[in-house]
Image (tube, rainbow, N blue to C red; front, side):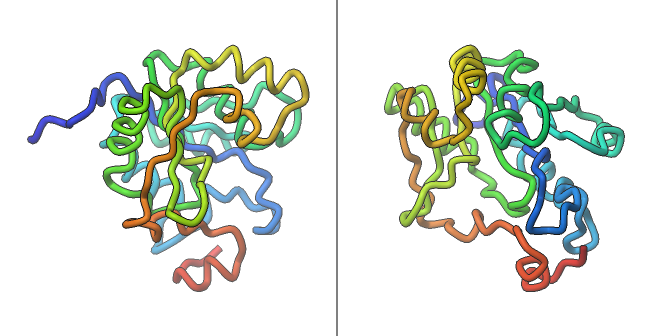
Length: 200
């Protein structure tokens, strides 16, 4: 096997599966089927080989998620407080210097996602590397230093919820994925799912 060109064992993958999923009728999006398998399985299949460890961030059906054999953490804040709450909870349980974040509703992430994010972070001496497709950023696809946990916790406890606002408080670099823009296609609605050939 070819040696990864980045320190894979220093990176924990975090899959965000804790959203309210209002546009999917409140269904647990990670467990909705695409091509006969839940979204979460597609993302695990893509992210797990790119990282040294994996954590699933979820707020319901925790037993279903634990059945995949990875640690599952729930938000430390009441209700569905958005992706930053899930990231914060996962960082508290992460033993590696870096965490690579990916959402469960984008089931075909790039197979070199983590390597490219790491190289961008390293080359720019940044705290966070966030994916962009040439037109816009995809902030829940990012690599960040786990030492940012305290900063993130303070931001959330202060009432902050917008991920881009928190990014502005850190040294953030953008990783160009314009050559793989389709890997960020997310499935937010039943119509999105139907177009992708899935069933709810």
